[in-house]
Image (cartoon, rainbow, N blue to C red; front, side, top):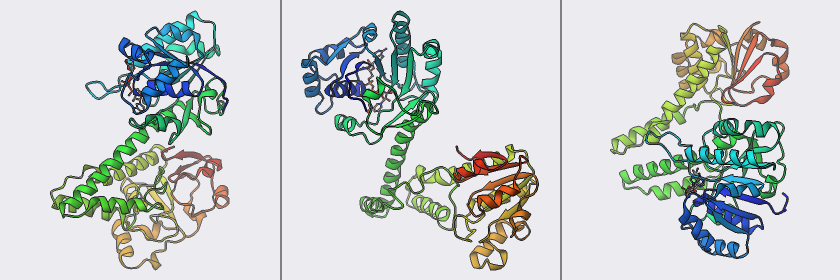
Length: 439
Ligand SMILES: NC(=O)c1ccc[n+]([C@@H]2O[C@H](COP(=O)([O-])OP(=O)(O)OC[C@H]3O[C@@H](n4cnc5c(N)ncnc54)[C@H](O)[C@@H]3O)[C@@H](O)[C@H]2O)c1
């Protein structure tokens, strides 16, 4: 990215704003910090950090002395800059809702500034805001400036951790920026490009907003999960730290992107049964485990979301492409697709199933008993020929790539709806109406 010096104002000089200001100044940019609290402004101007953060006092002192950083309570100062970064707080209201009043009042100040200035400007939101917030604020305060090309709007989530904020800013764990129109703005123009990390990912505003919340929710889920495993272990005098240490040493299935994309509900002969058993075990030890207890209901909600999607297509005939719980197996135990087929049969749908690995005559043992109990009509619903499985009109629920695109194409028309359960995006090019499960 360009190394040109940029003139930048930062609204909000708290944990994020003061670190951002000092770090950008240390890269040679010209920074003006703006805050409503005169004490924070005075501290920065005297070369001190307004908050406690290792290394920040020295960095601010250095940058103020070099003439690259100053602070003020006057928002109109931003007029002389090309980029405004918004780092004000976004607290929760008493009812838990997101309070955007600080961001809103900064937007009003920036709109006033744009009204009186003839210059082009870039507005970069850094405050954590729910999906849709940045676009709504942009439409509310800046639509005419955006339409005339005078203002560009971005959302640049911040991932720094307090306590190691300077190191995190300089070597971020993740860099992504949200733009108003990701189809046309694949690369960011100057001056904003001049302050971004190399290789930053460009996405839509809402995706960038959700990314920030997803990261924090994931961190919270990790902490809660580790604490629950720790409490279960403590319940029988075990060593939860050692268990989690070993769990984390598996970089293939555990600490990896495996299992980390939206798609099928989980199923199979192990996950549902073992999650259920662990929850019961915790209860027998008098250990409460709300995170673990939430997994099966969450999975059931996901299945219900899929059922609603089928219902929305308005077709009474449904073909399941794939019925076993995952690829390359005939195992039906715990398969969410079996539950789907059963739920749809109960609702009066006409069900056909195509899964070349599954044949009622070769099912044995528990697998056979499970299939007969959960889906008594399996024999008649299973079709060995794809053309028999797909009627002239209907909905296809495609959970596995057990049929090739070339085999599907001639059997489909505008009378078909394709529900993609597992992110097989090539299905979008087939005839019919494509529906992604979570995309
Ligand atoms: N603290 C973190 O580790 C962290 C990390 C990533 C993202 N975030 C997000 O960044 C945002 C800021 O967080 P923070 O911890 O720095 O907050 P903070 O409360 O420490 O700082 C916010 C600052 O904004 C100032 N402010 C309020 N209204 C203003 C206005 N109209 N004009 C100028 N300044 C104004 C306040 O006086 C305060 O100094 C939040 O949305 C937060 O969720 C925080």
